[in-house]
Amino acid sequence: MTTQDKAQNDNQPEKGQAGREDGGKNGVSRGKGRPRRRKRPGKGTRPKDGTLRFIPLGGIGEIGKNMYLLEFGEDMIVIDCGLMFPEEEMLGIDFVIPDTTYLEANKDRVKGILLTHGHEDHVGALPFVLPGLDVPVYGTKLTLGMASHRLGEARPDYKPKFKEIKAGDKVKLGCFSVSFIPVCHSIPDGVALAVETPIGTVIHTGDFKLDPTPVDGRITDYSAFAELGKKGVLALMSDSTNVEKEGFTQSESVISGTLERLFREQRNRRVIISSFSSNLHRVQQVADVAARFNRKIAFAGRSMINNVDLARRLGYLQISDDMMVPLQDIDKVPHNRLVLVTTGSQGEPFSGLMLMSKGEHHRVKLGPKDVVAVFATPVPGNEKMVSNMINRLFRCRCEVIYEKSWGTHVSGHASREELKMMLSMVRPKYFVPIHGEYRMLVRHAQLANQMGVPVKNTFVMDNGDVLSITDKSAQAKSKVQAGAVLVDGLAFGELESSVMRERKDLAEDGVLVVSMTVDRRFKLLSDPMFESCGFMHLHDAEHMRKEFSDAIRHTVKKASSQRGVTVEVLENKIRGRCRDLLRKYAGTKPRVIPLITVLDR
Image (cartoon, rainbow, N blue to C red; front, side, top):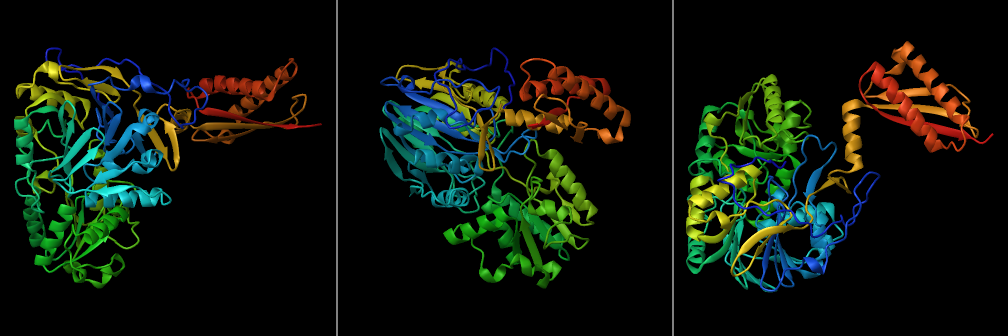
C-alpha cells in the first residue's frame, strides 16, 4: 500500500538513511527460498543516554496498521496497535499487522500500550501482539470496549490488563508522563497524546479533525494544544490523511440535514442506509431523524450489530428499546415505517448490503419499494467493488443514492486549514507527518515548512526508521526491522513468503498434477495420469495428452537407467520436462506437481 511518490529535490524534507540495526522475524516459520534469519535486536539498539527515539512500526506510507514507539533510556511506550486490510494481490489473507520483532525483543522495557481510538487500524492487531507482551493497555471506555470485544473473539483465553482513562487524565509510565487530550473523529472517545519526556514534550494527534459542532458535543480541546504550544513542544506527530483537501472538513452534524431530506422525499419507501459500523455519531443521527419521522430502526451486519450493542451498553448511543426492531421481525413493520442500517458501504464481500445486492441476504429482499443510501465514499482501492455493488442494487429495481451531490459522507480527518491550525497552536521544534500514504506525508511536511518549521527539522520517515532526538539536534539515520506480517486465519507469514508466491502462481497460471506408479527400480507400472485445475484439461486435448504421456515415459525410462536416482531427482526431471512442453503449447507456466508412488516389488 506504500506509495513511493518522490517530491521535488528542493522541497523534499530530510529522511533517515537505512542503516540496519536488527533482523530476524521472531516466531514466524520460514520455507525454502526465504531469507536467512538475521540476528535479533538486542542491547546495542537501545538509545544512548539523553536520546529520545521515535520509531514507527506501521502507519507510515500507508493507511492502516498504525503502531509507533517512543523510547528513552530503559523505557518504551507503544502508541496504537492496528491492522490493515489486505490488498487485492494478497490472496486469501484476512488482514495485515505490523512486524513486531523489534518490540518483542525489547518487551522487558515496554511500559504499556496507549490507544488513541477504537478503529481497527489502531486496535485490530492487539489479539496477535498483546499476549506476547502482556503489558497494560490504556484507552477510553469505548476504545477499550471495542478492543475487548476483538480480543474476546480471537483470544478468549487471554485476560488483558486494561486501564480505563478519561480525556484530561495523566498517567506515569517509566520516565514518560502521558496526558490524554479529547479530539473529534468519526468515532466517539478519540484522544490525542501529550507525552512529557526528560527532554521535552511530544504530541501525537491520533486521528482528528476540528469539528466545531460535534454530534456528541465533545469538541477537540483547542486550549490544551495551545497551552502546550506556549510552554514549548519538542516534536509533533500529526495525522496526514486529508492534507490534499483544501479548506476545512465539514462537521458530522451536517449529515442530519441530508437524512431529513432523504426521509422527507422517500416517505413511501423503506430506507436502507449503509455506513461504517464504527461511525456511531452517524448511527445516532439516523436514529434521531428516524424518530422524528415516526420510523422504527433495525440493524444488519455482524459488526454493526455488535458495535451498536456495545455503544448502547456503554452509554454512547441513545436509542430506546421500543424504537428498535430485531432483524427477524422487520417484515412485521410497514415498509414506509422502517429504516434499516447495515454494513457494506465499502463493498465488502460478505457485508450486509453486498448480500442484499446479490439477493442472498437471509432476511432482506430489495425491490421497488426500497431506497438504498450509501453514507460513505469508497476507500482508495475499493472503488470497483463499490461500483459493482451499486450496479447490482439498481438491478434490484430499488432507488439508490450515492452521489456526492447528496452530501452523504463527511470525513473524520482534518483538512489543510485544520492542519495549519494545529501547527499554529502547537508550534513544534520538530515535525513528523504520520498516518498517510507517502505523497500525503510529503505534502504535510511541506505544509509544516510553510508554517515555519525549518526543512531540516521536518522528517518524512518510513516504517522502521529511527528518529533520534537530543536536546540539541535530531536525525533519522538508523533503522530497526519493520514491515508487514500477513494473517490467514490463525496462521502468520511474511509478506514475501513462499506460501504467497505459490498462491499467486496458482491464481495466475493454475496447476498440473502428474501422478504415476513405479517400482523400486523406478520403472513405470502404469500409464501416467494427468489432472489440471485453472489450466486447460488434458483429457480434452488428446494429441497434447499423448505427447505429455510419451514424454513422461521417456523421462522416467532415462532416469531409471542412471545411478543415484531418487524420488526427488525424478520429480525435478518430470517437472522440467512438463514445463518445456507447456511453453510449447500454451506459453504459460502452471505449477507442476509430480506425485510418484513407489511400490516395493
